[in-house]
Length: 391
Ligand code: HEC
Image 1 (cartoon, helix red, strand yellow):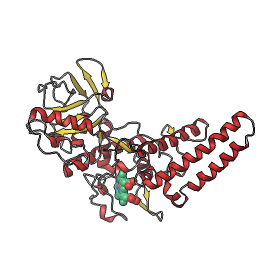
Image 2 (cartoon, rainbow, N blue to C red):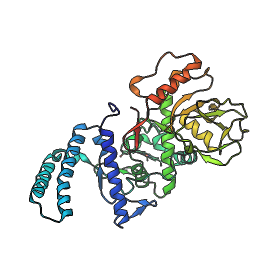
Image 3 (cartoon, rainbow, N blue to C red):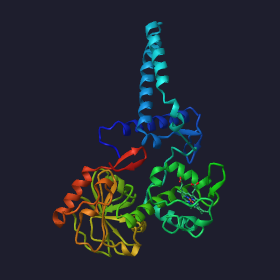
Image 4 (cartoon, protein in one colour):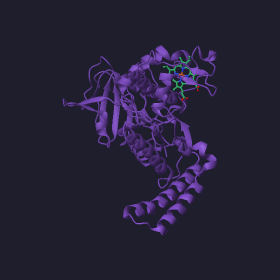
């Protein structure tokens, strides 16, 4: 949990992440990094362990201090070079600063700064968190993963007990603590314990590169649905799944083209009339094979319904009547189940843990306004780059 928006740590971590990505881009441009999945491949066996720095403030601070001093030391040296004159005091200052920087460097804990890396460490899914990827990934999961990880991903498959290591519960925040590129690598290459013995098999022969990316989208949707079932809230922020939408006979446009505006997705049962609400862009999602609803904007394709059912943790037959609200940054924040008389405060299912479910505010007319106000007041922030968290 970050103590406030003036906190230096997230900005420092974001800078370190960008520095590593810039290094990779530069190496790639110079022909020193190969490609994998059509993206630059990280050439080193290690990377900065931002996930460790995020919880070890002391270490993050000493690294910041050392880098600042080193940068200050390099400035006069650079200036001396540019002027092409030997300026002894400048060089002496630079050497002094360099020495101080090296002395400040967190040598003692240096091993904590690094985490093992793989070529795909800094890669991102080309299919992203899309409804189509979630539905495709679901099929693969049924074929290849259920035996160990169980029907809901909690690690209770029929073969779980025979594994050298019990398969972890994938729904309790594990995915959010990992880089997607490193999860992708594990699906392709399997996992080993510290002694190098295999713990999870490799799926490179049965899973194409794009299958593996799609599976990761499914795992996220599954984790969201399971945590809603078990905890009554999303333990990790869930992005709006990417969908194609058409409004009033216009061209199809991606859902992400509305970023910056609040969206409401409504799963409507066959052709039902949907009232617009000035507080949102409303998008109707109809069950596959059902007539489109009388709404201005309609999700296209049969996958939208199945993907939203996964995220809500219900069977597709139970989804009709469910509503979702996404904030202006594109995070799903609230879910109103069918059979309730309008929005309730507890429908804000993506919220900071510490605050818990607010009580009261039951007057239907302003319950939704209160919910929106709270959603806007508590934006989703990335503490470790790439892994979103609530404030
Ligand atoms: C034969 C059993 C088995 C099968 C099949 C299996 N897994 Fe695993 N999985 C494991 C075990 C055991 C671990 C723990 C490995 C470890 O921590 O070394 C694991 C760990 C994981 C993790 C956590 C990785 C991490 O970084 O902690 C993910 C994600 C995962 N599996 C996804 C999948 C997916 C997706 C499939 C289907 C393609 C799958 N697994 C198939 C046994 C299995």
